[in-house]
Image (cartoon, rainbow over all chains, first blue to last red):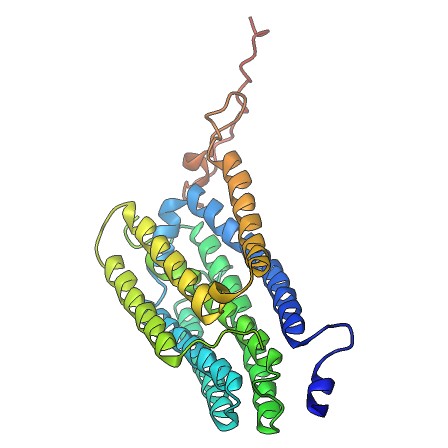
Length: 213
Length: 127
């Protein structure tokens, strides 16, 4: 019971109320993240509307194979995160630690594939500016500007997620989480799944839908 | 604790559904469906998002108050899209607005841009 008292902050009646408050706080933060990415998605919608041909031509140069592999990696990492939360709920310390490590590993795989892809994109002169490919219409640079900033911002989020989940793994290894208290695992899980959701939209918008328009 | 425990079996099924949808959206992108390529890709993306939010993020089992918090961000994003598009999609349609002039903007950079005179506004007094 001593452990229970340390986990419950003073201002809350009981553990369920505390978890509920943490959850709503996290969703409030995620709502600001929706609008943070939302501005870029809005820019994409408007410029795609104004320059459909240039966007079509530009997006044929994104590497679908890397994009598809990375989608599969992130969706799988969401599964392992869900399994980590489940392990925490059942106080299975070792399973929790392992699933967190697998999730971190998949996050690093995502970043690795993204790095390979960025390298090839740069070799293809797809960085907007003076050295941008001459065989594409000049407005294609707007698509590639959005590509670099949206995937770049997303990659930063993945990096933050990897750091947070590594910290969670360290705390889990010290046995801080149990059926009674696992709010940090659940909250960082929400963040991880949100990053996955952003990619769920980036994948069709950047890699798929302009190929025939 | 009031957090609902979702059995790993269900998580695995959701994951399988997500991977199936990934294959489907990739496959559909290989076929020319005209404008329906966009519709199909976005419909699948929304479905994938709902699966992640409802099951992996446990929202299906959360309180109604949490639902409100979840919906808020997305509703505000839709307001952003709606108000912005009500401008861009009606340019040149609504009286007194000018269309997005593709021809001028998409001319190759080597040729000098034609000087565009601003068209006179049609007003009832110009007679």
